[in-house]
Length: 166
Image 1 (cartoon, rainbow, N blue to C red):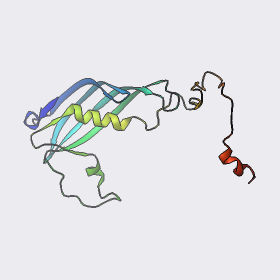
Image 2 (cartoon, rainbow, N blue to C red):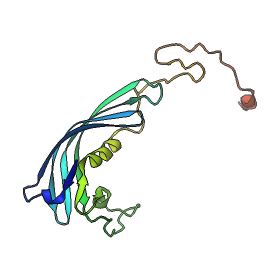
Image 3 (cartoon, rainbow, N blue to C red):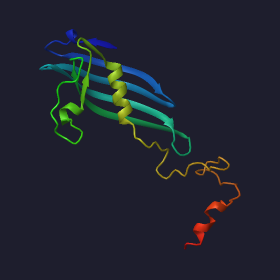
Image 4 (cartoon, rainbow, N blue to C red):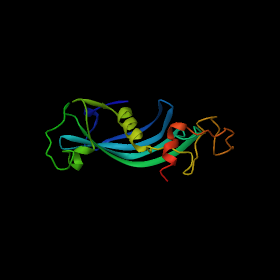
C-alpha cells in the first residue's frame, strides 16, 4: 500500500493493515498492524503494534515451526530520497536514531515493504521446533526426535589416526 506524504496532516494518518507474504519456505502472515504516521520535522514517524504469525521448517528436523510475534514498532522515515549526512557515533558510524531510519522517495513510501522488512528482522535466526531438537540422521534421514536411527555406524578411516592421540 503506497502512502503519499501529502496524506499525513497535523492530526496524523491512521494505518490498519493485514497481509501475507512468503520468503523461500518461510510464510509470514501479518495478522494486523495498527498504527499511525506523524510528521516530525523533516521526517515522519510510524508507530504501531505488529501482530505476526510466522511458519517455516525446523532448521534441524524440517518439522513445521509456528510462531506468533507481537511487537511495538517505531520507524523513522526520511523522505529525502537519499541518506542524510551522518555523524559517526558508534562503531558502525550510525547514531541510534539513524540506525532505525528508512530512507524513502521524496513523496511516498510503501507501508507493506516497511512492515515486510521489519517482519524479516523479528524472526529468530535459528528456527527450531523445540529447544532440544535432535534433527535428522545424515545417513538414513530418520527424525531423531521420534524414531531410532537404523543406520550401521561406520567409522571413517581417514580420522582413525586421531584416536591414537588420546
